[in-house]
Length: 162
Image (tube, rainbow, N blue to C red):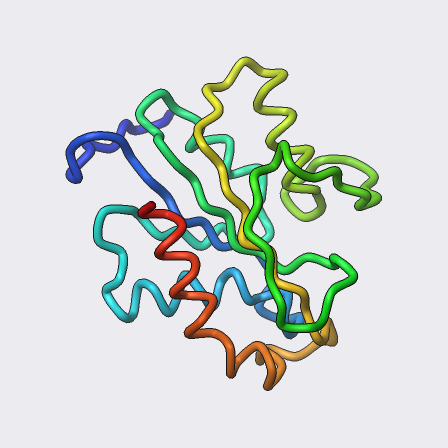
């Protein structure tokens, strides 16, 4: 059973959703951004959510009341480590090879496409994709991404509120 949340913000809902895996270095950058937003009490006017590896969870926010979703995740984009791009899903083509959509493996672009196929309301979606430096098994961000974390937080908050 799904419980409908009361919108305390008035108007339309906005979400900042962090994806990733805490145990694989920079794969956890989306989760670290959400942590920083919540610990800094920067989540005014939107809800910050850690989705972990469960990208399919994003479908639950595809509601008529949702105005904007900003997804923060690491992405292999063939750019300098630590650099980032903000884009709309329709502006890119994913070349990630996945076997299926599941809660542990998936491509956010394919999940959004699934939402379209299911007839979900598709809000304005932006992706803040950050090029990782390391995806080794370690629970810490690489020094480069750790140093730039405040910048990523600032970009994420600005993007969700604009």
